[in-house]
Image (tube, rainbow, N blue to C red; front, top):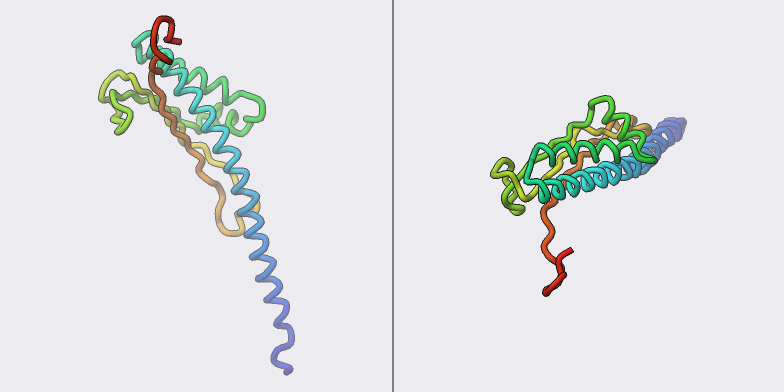
Amino acid sequence: MSRQRGIIIPIVAIGLLAMLAVAGMALDGSHALANKTRIQNTADAAALAAAKVLDQTQNTAQSTAAANSLFSINADGLGNHELNDAYDAGDINVTVQYSTTVSPFVPGSGPGPFVRVLATGFDTQTTLSRVLGINDISTPATAVAGPSGPLGTGNGAEV
């Protein structure tokens, strides 16, 4: 019996470490998911803006400028402070690509009509997950947009 004395301390320590790790993954995972939603919404808006400008002008330079401009505006939006800080610091790389087909999307196959916006380099910094050696969680985004077809049929059906 005397050999089992003090065994409770290591068991409690291991249990507390496990609970801290699980809590860290839950908190940091939800934080990363919120940031993923923010950057995805920003990339979606940038792709839609680029596709609209490309549809109107057939100019990829203007389309790329519209994507970058709208990405910057949305990154600066309310509640996007982490995204904006990373974008302003140059950590986020926004790439605009063009393809003649959407599936498969073949970058450089033509000047459109399909546009893909890739946003990479945005990492969500962790807090409690550092116990497991996870210091950041990568949160990239990709969005594809293209021209809209006419709605309905007949005179005045196009929007």
